[in-house]
Length: 68
Image (cartoon, rainbow, N blue to C red; front, side, top):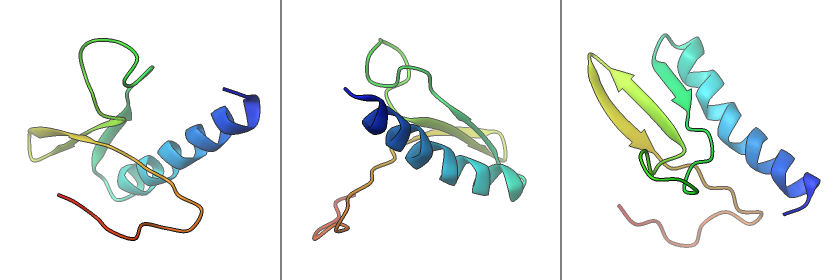
């Protein structure tokens, strides 16, 4: 992966994290997400003592269909 792609991925994951932290919600990025065992998501979000994983995606033309 090239530097431009790496930088885009970092920005894509960091922007929502900053919004959550600014709103007072605990959130941390997962280093090497998907590359190592353990946390599978891109971010760990904690609200009222409950932790969850968040996956962050970015597409140039948005998403035609979203799945839950």
